Figure 1 (tube, rainbow, N blue to C red):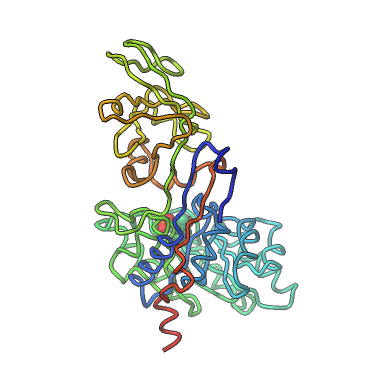
Figure 2: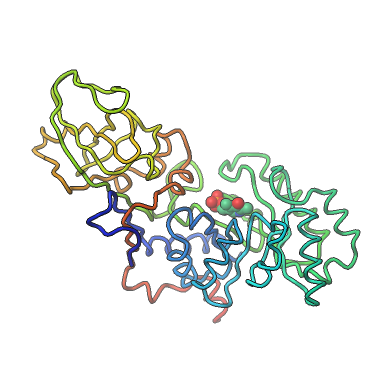
Length: 388
Ligand SMILES: *Cc1c(COP(=O)(O)O)cnc(C)c1O
């Protein structure tokens, strides 16, 4: 399966390992067991392609999919089986209620006004509508406050019209196992959720799965770790999913002192060689990597020489000559792969792996690599349990 421009025309080749993706899902599902494991596929599955990624996760046993926007849910729905549940984390925008209900999508109600509008629609349709209720347990982002909850519960018929599918909250510091706020949020979430009708509880994102199991609840919601990113500092327990290679579009000799790129910010003390690759900041390779990041060729580090341009990057490839290596037009260098992880790039760029992933551009030739044995995926713990 491929997507984007053809291999010959593209400036970069993005390879997405579906076997690693499924393995990451199963790994997280085992860690979270007996909680159910959803998948967060917002922002086009963190840039990797929701229409390709979500069906593979479904085959691995996933039944619950979270996106950020209603539009994302409606676009993804045809790629999944009719029984799959789609939830919209950003909630319901005024006027979008009917489209949400007609699409069979479950909104996350983040505030009283959204709750009332959803309820009004249910009344006018004469049928109860499912919803997730999000409680703010101490992040001051989305969700009902305690006062909101008081007001909602004062309305004694609300849950006749709205069926509570899941009650959720979100952790502010799940990637910091030592943070006291995790236990505090868990306790607050439990206390507030206890006041609602019985429903599955959901608190943990990727990082939350690696906290002690009291943070798991009934449904965990990993995103980034499905795509290979470590849920915390320290050795990465996940398998890499994305690999990116960039095409060399020109090489040139430079003299000692000859300046390179916009702003003329790079020069060598000795003569050397520069390679230009066809990936730039318009492809999501951060401009902040100017004179700090690198690419790799056969394990040799090739520092970024000068500023990252919109459509190209200049690399100092002088180190190749002493190893008897050369680069020619059409060769590729590694931007993400065995020598450089998303974590490495994010660190050099002063950001987090999430941002590097979700910015990966639309101009790459994308290959979705599936191991042929994937058709017989090991069943997830949930499926195994259902069968026994
Ligand atoms: C994005 C998001 C997640 C997934 O978080 P990761 O850190 O990528 O695992 C889970 N829950 C909510 C509410 C989110 O916004």
